Length: 138
Image 1: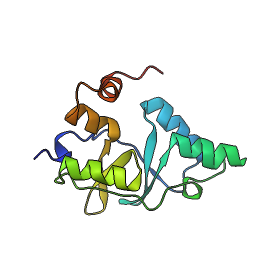
Image 2: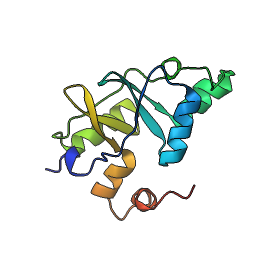
Image 3: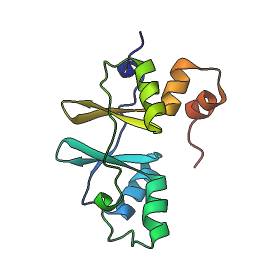
């Protein structure tokens, strides 16, 4: 059994729900990532993706400089443990139609596993694995 902890990324960014969309977008750009885990103290309360900022924020004419992450956060975030089976993590992604799962320990984010991570681990010859393994081109 391959566990989530064997291939999760520990290079995740967390931000407070009171931070702005613009701050999150800058952090995503500077860190070459597509999401931030939203926290309240150490507790994971949601996730915001670059798509959330575009669709729930900018497309709704919300001001990115004043709109808070709490206003666009996906709150019913599905999480996994580093000890969970990678197949179970893939099943959760499929069931809940999500591409990323925060990895938590006692409610605190310790990593992130993405669909691309699973592809690299489980199907290294796939196109998604090739794309996911490459350095970002932005």
